[in-house]
Length: 119
Length: 119
Figure (tube, rainbow over the protein chains, first blue to last red):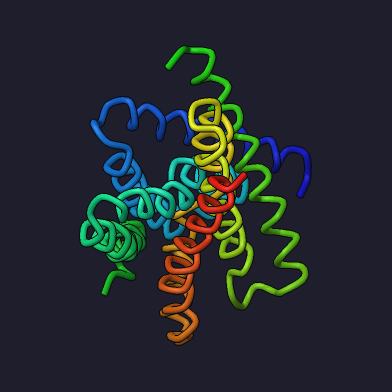
């Protein structure tokens, strides 16, 4: 945990947070923007994990950028907010986020792996 | 949203990501890397705190909530970790890391919102 490593994570996290907020400004509801950020972020982190080995690049783009782009707290609080309006939609939103996120992570890891290793 | 609030929230997201990096390393030193306890506990505490901030600071909470706590918690790493556990044959741990985190994260958000409303 050197100062350079912390700086790389912070710089990536700042960009990822800015990208997540921009998505929030473009879409009508917060829940949709969080879902889209989380699923695309899981896909891209899969590609990065399978493809990039350089530690500093992984800290900047993985722990920082994609870690900051995706979020869990807004998923949890958004689910509770939806629950008060439409309980079924809240369950679909929470479970759907994780199911789609897992699928996106598997797809990203597959897309990022070298062609030979793909099974 | 003013440009100033956007920039402050992005910077707070960078600080949140750096805090996540430091806390994750600290928890891994205590609990090991067999199970991703770091991200697990980060997402639960972040969901609780976002509930608290949402209930107590509806408007002024943007920089702390969407910025700092959005960058502090993460979804993408949780998904990749769950897939990695599954592929290592740690299937109950993989299931708990997804379903347990989701259920406990939502309960943490409820606890934060409830406590915040009572303050």
